[in-house]
Image 1: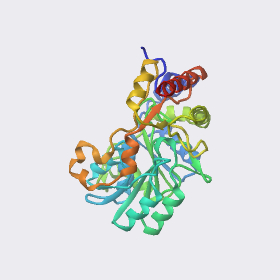
Image 2 (image 1 turned 45 degrees about the vertical axis):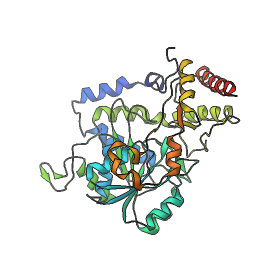
Image 3 (image 1 turned 90 degrees about the vertical axis):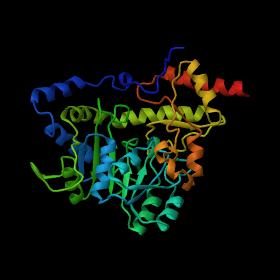
Image 4 (image 1 turned 180 degrees about the horizontal axis):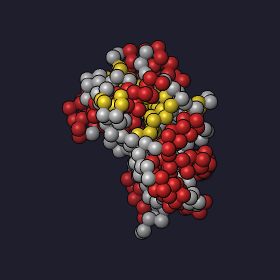
Length: 369
């Protein structure tokens, strides 16, 4: 059967936004890199997050790498991360030559476990901690931050899936030492191509990141920092993000409403669903956990509903980490990766489409009984 309900639709999500005006503004300016649009977006996004500084970069993975470098992470250094978040933090670490040390996750939120982090910082020599707000769910930053502060280890918040999430009055990206964002088109705030940002409240860190995103320059053609690269948010993407930023709160609300309908409908089914529908969750992905997920996905596919797995292979089980596999014990992470399934949840998904997803999921479990 032809898929009638995609996992994400850029056409539906972008309905009603005048992106052509933003594009025309850049074309007419004849300035395409590090100009007014980027500077204004950086200012507007920093204001939205209530942080002092925002530095636009090429993509979310570059944002992680430059944040790590700005904190002085170097070859051989140890960084604490989770292993269930798609290998993105690991990619940044490998670019530097730093080493990942894995921390197990909380079974409900599937974000970093505070108790596991507490054990990890006691038994290692971490240079930094990367905390991923996975699926749009903010991690327990109060408990995690307390542990990190006590150990004197800086936190990088990976907010690639959590634009606009907030808890206890603070938005994702504003709590740790540094926050990083991706603006890939499917994100809650997405560009029409790649883009990213690094945010912080420390002026010296912000200056260092600004240098690192442009070759490590102290001034034009004067290289002062090692580890610099060409990673700049271009004017076109910045202008598009400026056009879309005012819609972010409404879009997040739409995502939560869909998630709320799913949670209500699936309450009696043998699935684990997102534990929070509050402001700390922006429903970037609606992820459930279940047994026999392959059969479930096949059933939904025959009824025209797309699904995916975010993410099937934990970092320590990836082929490039074959030599590390016997040394890692992450039972909660491995159980999650073996059971997660993502259902459609995005702005523009119609009530009728949500009804169809709900009815089909229920039909599957009725047949299972």
